[in-house]
Image 1 (cartoon, rainbow, N blue to C red):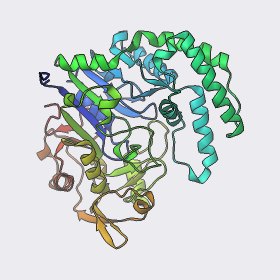
Image 2: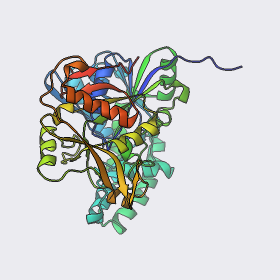
Image 3: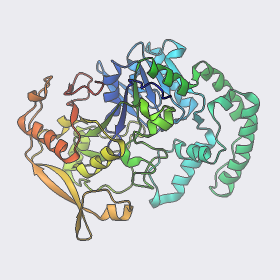
Image 4: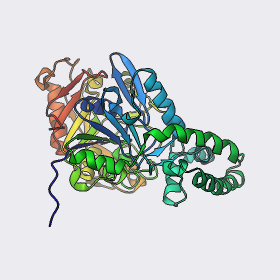
Length: 436
């Protein structure tokens, strides 16, 4: 006997570049017609910026759908949670009238915690790397995932059991303090202060703690529309990105399954978010990076500064090789192109269609970071366009802007479903609804 097929109303949204593609704005847009919005990986190293009614909101852990009333926001088991950051975010949102009920935010009971020693280790390691630093945000995300894989992590369910938390914290602190002192030259952390403060934090979190995997399975099978929101981008995926200049989790669409605890058959569609150009924060290879005045113009006009760290983003031409890589890994059904307006007035526009490496032309992202760092982009030039219309249809855009989008479709093999022409929620053209 086989189980009945579920007509799942689900959409997984992932970044198709090095993060910072505008996922927050697109998720906010799609959340209006969704019932449940889920974060499934990463931690508060993500920064999703939303501009609604002229007011800017930056979210780090709570899903971007929170600005719509009556939605359920879920932080699933695959996320590493800094409870201090989460509670600060919840308090700020509640002060503005959001998340009025505890059940509006559900936090996975098996999600792992980021604790003070994770942040201390993260910052000390990056300091000692000097010129070889990898560009971590210093938020403790990497060390928390390390402990998870080493099977010594502390989960939210452990925090809610006083004796379990006491035992695990004591054992971990003994090991971490020895490492902090002997290897990193840092001061030891005190057990009592951490234990008492985090025990109180656990009680504040308790009303939100849920078996989120079971909750999501039930909601999907009930026919509810569930939107999965990824953090970071494909090229920062720990297995498929520019390792070691990556984040500490999987960012591809498949991570929504593992991080949320849902079955593969319950994912209906996938949407990739990409800027009309390319950016990345921190170190690592970046084939289409611009130097000089044009790169500065993109950074200035696109407000390309990290929402989490404030660091200036590196800017470059659109890289079709990278987006094809993301499309293949996540099986993208559609693309959302953001910040098309930032390219207005630049002529010509360039698109990287392939790489030249060691005398040959390649159409894929090489695994070797050294090789990727040495490739020469193969560019195709397209005519630029002027200021964009704020119309509601694709045909409202200038001819050359439409041609630019069409070329992206031809090069990536993925249809464009959404185009963003400004930071505000209403400055968005929906060509083909990703939600169906």
